[in-house]
Length: 324
Ligand code: 13P
Ligand code: SF4
Image 1 (cartoon, rainbow, N blue to C red):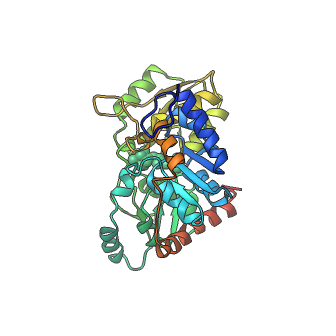
Image 2 (image 1 turned 135 degrees about the vertical axis):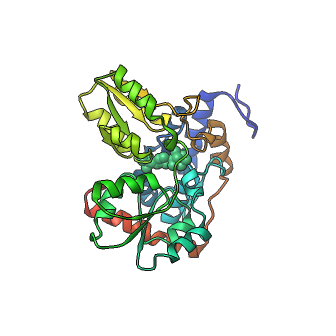
Image 3 (image 1 turned 135 degrees about the horizontal axis):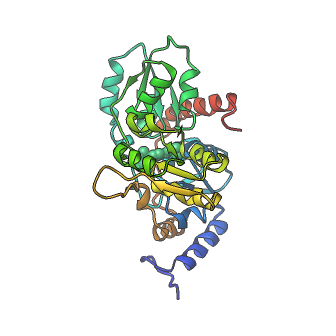
């Protein structure tokens, strides 16, 4: 029997029920990223990519946002809806891309290119957002870049893989910050080639945070939402998936008749779980909603400066019909 205590509780079913009822009682909304464990995705009010999640966070009238994702995502929710309490089950749920771009080093880098604007991938800290002209996600990065004239000089931060991909497909020459996602950057090209040979009818779908060699081999490149939609609408029966394992839950749920093969890493294990996303557990989620902490806190100054480039992204995305 479940006990009302703040210690770790191991009864998944009962925990889920408690979370759902606390959510109702506290008028809270649970937003979850696709890389969360299936049991969290299944009780979320919305599961999505960074673009969809920011939109939901901006538009909610809930009293509290429980963000089952990583720190920069919860920060973005707070920036977009500062009057609402935003909590994250584990404050250590960071992101290697965000961590690769410390504010002082980025300020010095930016100062070297005074005639460039800054387009930052949403996977960065609130401080980096305050130094950016516009934010993008993997769901709108190409369109955001293309909304600027070709002669516009641009710094793109912090993901060099995503930035390089955009440079190649748009013919731009953006200056790239040297950051990578520790999960996507080590997906193995050799394993992909082997999987392609063994499964000649399978399509390779990849997240743009993967390195160039992987993206070159892909039949489709897109955000997590775009990859999911592709598997639902394409007639292929088998997909080789180059991203974090959490996405397989929705893919299998939406297309149970199809087969999904996850690309392993080039380390000896095939553990391409994001170590930060996977810090969130049902137990931590329960304690977080119950105790309403850990809470995301930002100064008014950071919120007001970081909000501008995010709103600009949402405005461009609406204009281009990428979001409603
Ligand atoms: P998406 O916005 O495509 O879901 O990507 C977020 C992310 O962190 C990928 O590693
Ligand atoms: Fe960051 Fe990579 Fe994890 Fe996404 S998968 S949150 S980019 S470390």
